[in-house]
Structure formats: C-alpha cells, structure tokens
Image 1 (cartoon, rainbow over the protein chains, first blue to last red):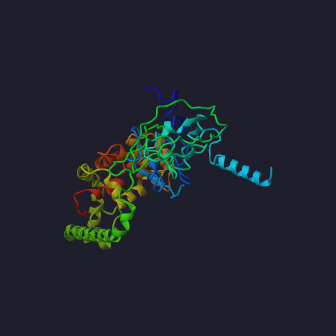
Image 2 (image 1 turned 180 degrees about the horizontal axis):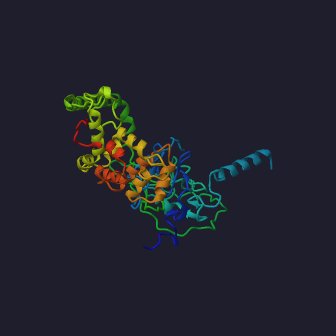
Image 3 (image 1 turned 60 degrees about the vertical axis):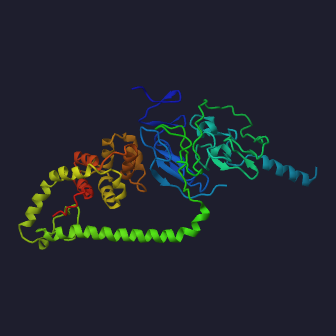
Length: 84
Length: 355
C-alpha cells in the first residue's frame, strides 16, 4: 500500500495527517472561532448557520470517508459570537 | 502643512491601513498557511461564495496561525452586490470592483502551489435547498469550513405561532410519556409479581449484579440459585439478547442516554477492570471497530468534556449507518466485558423482567 501523500509529500499517518495541503501533527490544534479549538486531523470546523448566527461548531471527521459538515456528528458547539 | 491637514492625512492612512487582524504576509483574498509557510488562495480553499451577495472576508477569516477567527464569508455592504459568486462584491448595477490594498507589501512572494478551485457549494439560505457544504473533505482534508442547513422558517413568522406550537408540543410529549409509562407498567408489573424470587426495586432490565440481602429473598435457597444463575447468565444472555439487539441500529444507543451513561462509566475509564493495561476499555472497542490508535488518543484527550465512547459511537454510526447493537454486543463479549453487555441488554426488545 503506497504511503499517503499530502500535496507532493508523503507523510506518516500514525503521527501526521494532511490538512489544507500541509502535513500537520496529529496533536495539532487550531482555533475554530475563538475560544473554541479543534483538532484538524480528527475534526471539522463548521459554521452552524451561513451568516445568520455565525456560530462555529466542531464536528467529528469520519475516518476513511469524505467528511462533510452537514452529515458529520457534532463534537462540540462553540460559544456564540457575533461577527460584523 | 497645518495641523488639520496632518490630522486628515493620518485619518486617511488609518482608513487605508489593513485591519490589525489582517495577514502580515498575504493579500486580502489569500491566507497564510503556517505549515507550508506560503500564501494560499481563499478561492482555492473554500470555492466561490455559495450565496449571492456574499464576499470573502479579509484573508477569508483566518489569522496567520491558521486559526478560524471569523467566518470566511460576509454579506456585501450596503450598495454592493455579488450575484455571480465573485470573490468580492461590486457596486450594484455594474461598476468595477474597488481594488483592495494588499498586506505584506502588496505582492506575495510565498505562494503555495496551485490547487483546483472547489465547485461552488449549495447556498443553505436558499429555500428548498438540501444544504451542502461549500467543500468536501477526505479524511485528510483540504478545507474544513462549511455550513449546516439553517432553519427554513422565516424569522418574522415565529412570534405569532411560537407559544401555540410550544404548548402543543409540550402537551403531545406529556401524553406520549404517560402512555409509555402505562405501557411499561402494564408489561412489567404482572411478570414481576409472578416472579418467585423478586428483586426489590428491579423493574424491566438487567438484574443487579450485587447479591441481594437474604431478608429480601423468599427462601434461603434462593441466594445460591441467584449466584449460580449469575454465572450461567452470560451464555443465554449472549445468545438471546444479541439476537434481539442484532436488528436494532447502533444509533439507538445515542438516544438511550441512561444506558449510554452507564456504558460510559464502565468502558471509558482507564485502566480497565484488571488494572494496569487491562483490556476492555473504549480504546480497545475502537480498535475492534477498525479505528487507529491515534484516533483513540485524540478521543481520550477530549475528556472530561466529551466521552470517548460517545465519540466512538457517533463515528461508527456516521461511517456505517447499518451498524447494529448486536455488533457492539459481540465486541463487548469478545473483550470480556460482561458487565457492559448486561447494561446493553437493557435495550433488548424482549422486555423480560429478570429475576
């Protein structure tokens, strides 16, 4: 089985994942609308509603399939924030 | 050059300056990729704005650390329109797009490799639209921001009907709850009375694993019978209950909160029942379902705010909607977790009251 690629680089799936065309560590976390954090390797940062409430919501990625925000289960809801 | 003119110049410079949260390296329609150390196009990450009259925010809402600070899109300002899904709004009725000042000196020397632009997603604001994300993900995604389907009911209609709807809903729920209670009482109570070895406080469900005190038993011999029964109970439990659970979807467990909570208490803690590196925790259950160890490490890092078992069940249900409670029961049996299996058997459709 060929090594997984991220862009034009290969990476070790036991320690890394491909996020936004970049190789990141599995333990990497990012902000999903402060103060919420998410794990890019295992979660999706989604919007609860397009432009209406602008609440961010973190959802679980389903391993091995195309994860989509509308079909993925919620991992955690982030604090409501209003954006201009 | 008088002080008034200086003040005016300063104000103009401030107005033209990029907002403080703007990228230090990239232009307005780009964002800094801190992992690859390059600027990438917002359009190539999120696709065009899926809804009309929306445009990209500055750096599509990302800061230079790769964090989502604000949503990537925003509504056009007054007098601006974007009917064609361009990156930026333009004056309504025609007119050129106002060029925006680029941060980082105007040119971006570090450009990430070009990627295909994702297809324009469905706008969840459009009535009747099934709603879809603006971009799809693989398990190693290129983009992760997308939309959930919003409530289709217009805001102004709610105030008129809301109290009535809430009242009807509450009444319906109350009636259903009463009917369910009566049904359960009717099904369970006669069998409990006929049981020669009553367990106090036990209605329908799994028998208490603790030995009841002798004062509650109808005869001295019942204690021994109960112990022998407990030891032998796993085999008939496996065959009978698994057959009744096999037809039930795993997603049911997410609705049965009491059972789920009990399973969480039993399976999430580490180490397992044997102490040390014993087997039979949620971690081992995840491995049975084919999830990598790294995922389990991530799931356990979510504690205490989130249960790894709940995350596992949601993952399995999302990946395989046809997954059944029977499969879970089989895994629990293979892990030697008879205690969890007994809890799970509460969901069995037999409805038999145990003694």
